[in-house]
Length: 544
Image (tube, rainbow, N blue to C red; front, side, top):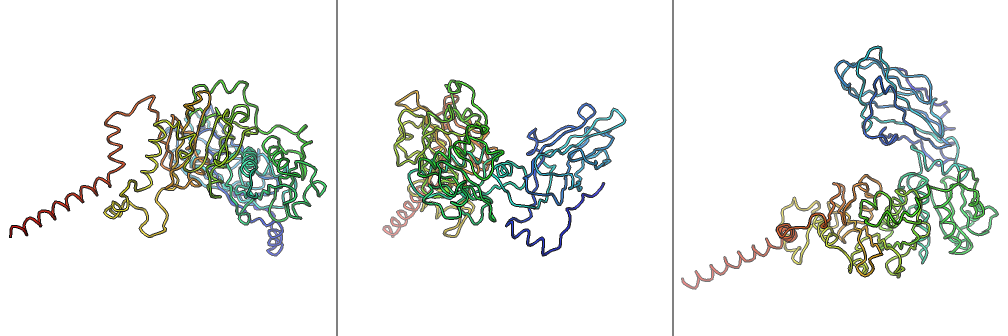
């Protein structure tokens, strides 16, 4: 095996100066091959399938200083023989001659073969006999790269390529907006556009100091001088998206007023910035490439009998016509919950590969259009009247299950907790965090007062953290497991509920009631036993 070559060396002061000017540290990341090729957790190398190609992308402003591959594989039989060759972008191969037994080899690749943009890792099998080949564990096999920035990102087009890269992409994104009536609309459209560029849901935050990318969304009068200077003419000309990089990359989404700022946010979700410089105006949208793909015609017809599986696979019924007949409401009060809701909405846009550009956005204090489908995202959404009056029994059962998974319930929960054993609580000190914060509930059903209207919700009970639950759903395979009329999700998996398929029996309902109030019942029995004991003592004293 040959060792990978190193990047061109530079003395320490120059290296520190370069890093300080870029305000970016050397980035080392490890990705499973299964996450890069999307072809499953394993692939076969054999005489009939002698090679597998894994494609990945790197940002346009980096060079690779180190590259390593961990290759986990097992022979298809004891007679397996031959060699495995690994090369990057058609470069010189690294040849290994493994014995016919399970292996996990770790070796350096030629880092000089890596390049900004598209790359191809090829793993090939060669044998002189008809012996079976190898089964590669693509989940345990991992590519590890150390990347160094050689210059700042310079244009919107380069930022778009960086966002879509498999390594060293800006993943923690700060959304900096002002509180106001259009805040949810501005952030929702921008978040969807960012997710479509990244190909995954970023980590949305409000902490600009810790972010890889800062997005300032505001009308022109609220921008500071640095952001104003980044605009094409240094002043507002209408809806505009601009880029600057003076240590940390910044996007500015703006306009002369809130309506134009909203139009600029809509541009974020509608058009690609590929090939554009440091600013993008509304007039540029005429020639710019569409972001995402066009939905099939009459998509709404496919959601006639929708359930959560339909929603998880396509975003329907809410994504039809890019959300033109959908109202999205956030039931969030805290910033962290709002970022969780934005994560969920961004995942829904990714599934359909298009932003919901024409949806109505607002919070639950506003009145959503009655002739629109309604999607409510955030904690305690079952307290919203539109949900409460039409909620199916599955949703109510799912909420009860989510509450049970988080600890005590019932009117006497404090007294019952006093007699519970320590294993029932993850935290024993006041103010400590509960055991399972990422439990949530999803549901999709028809409005009982308007059979043509769909209502959906992704929520949590008040004892859980929607910020944790929303992000875990949006950034994992839990999303793909949603099904039924309602479902409970947590880090342990997804539990669907659909009583139209299998209605709960009387025994099921009795068991649920018993589980719901186990500690309350135990407390009552304990109290009754104590009362009888005291009564017995009293009788004995009276007889004495």
